[in-house]
Image 1 (cartoon, rainbow, N blue to C red):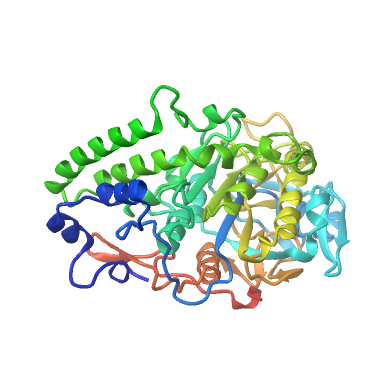
Image 2: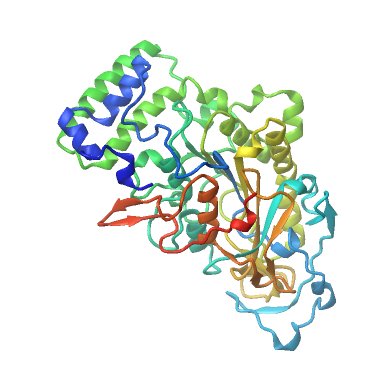
Length: 473
């Protein structure tokens, strides 16, 4: 699906708007006030290239780089060589110097009929092992946070590109016009790289992610200005109509200004959100049993909010573990990984079970993982470290992610790293391959979902990407 497939063949969208003397905001306003379809709305639901297996995505981002050999990719050989150099002069090409092998301090156990090995860090997630599709052959370009975050989110390590959530919303449109189609739950600040992780770049601004600081608990703090106690809704409608009439005049002389079009759309969405957003983000409306299942804490509220959003038609919800890079365990990996997993295991496990109970998992694709993995050997002490031999360095050569629901094989392991867990050697999946596969599950040929900008057609996977058909049910 390229840009021309989304418009009227004889006229471009901007030409049509200019010739009819109506901006996008005016058309959206007619929809809002009269209840009619917004014929030119870029958020209108769209047809996919072929029948989709997934209708929406929840991306659980464990930013910082969880260790694959301590979570979902057990390597018994690490115990044999613990504290010793790798055999046969094997060396690890890493960002910093590494020392001897570091055995995992965590025990692994087989779960479910599939017998998938999961670390003691994730006992609740492991209860849904038969729903998981474990990708053990992931690899990426570089062992640095910011470019790896950009690649995982946007398909490009350096230049500004639309993120995966924006491509999803651009291709599918929105199921619910009263909520943002793409929501980012990131508590207590921004991750490494900041908001470009969820920006739309050269796609129209209406497709960018709506960031919510999920550490807040009050609705009025989660969503600023969601309520207006001073002006009645009918008066707000009149004010908005006046503003949009002025915006229309402004747009007529600036028909090439995507930013203005996006601002007009944002006014409309903000007004419509007053009717539904407060309900969607208020987890206190859930039953006591449901809240207890998720856990009445930050991660529990995040996962429960994600379920409430997709249940109401939000296409893409990205849930960050926290700001910065919390999973970046250069030191004391036993303590740090145990603490981090304890924060989210219960909530993630509850999310998987809750989605299945509500018959949502079959067409909701859950994605778990970080931007890269970690080394099987210890990171040697340097000037900034005050401990020795207790942490792992960044590793872009091999790491693990998992998928659940949305048309992927259940209780399935795809790919493998070498016997020490350093490098992907079987079923290798680059981040571009992951993106191509996820788009396929959403019903898109990744080579055809394009947008023309600066004289060429762009796509999420650039000139790369192979669909991993082996993981599709």
